Image (cartoon, rainbow, N blue to C red; front, side):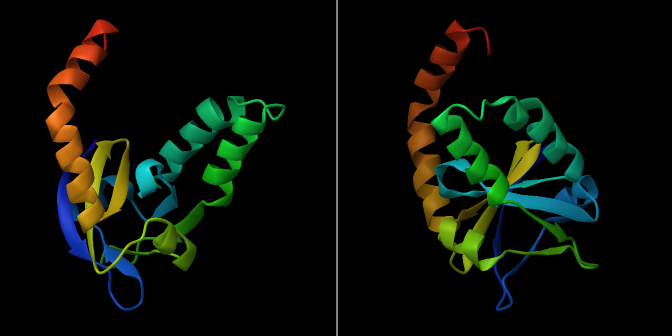
Length: 145
């Protein structure tokens, strides 16, 4: 399970060091793709296969929105190695998409890691913190919490 929040930097070669706790969970390869809310999502190959086979492959190619979402997730995905000291390379097009600057936040979100620009994360987190009670109540109505 991937949980927690860690602030790191991107080095000059566009590499990000994964926290030690995440390294144990992800192994030697990861898939990085566009995330929602302008972050990046990082999956283990096993979790990525689940997403593709259980979710994305179920979307109809006859629906424009579904085709677009598949393209967004799949065409934007890259497989990358975790190097011997736990770093991953962020390709330019994904770095640009998430507007990553020097400081970033890696957030564990159960089955995947999200990579956020630090400022964008703070803004997003504050907004969600201010709505947490309302969100919990809404989710509780549908039996999630």
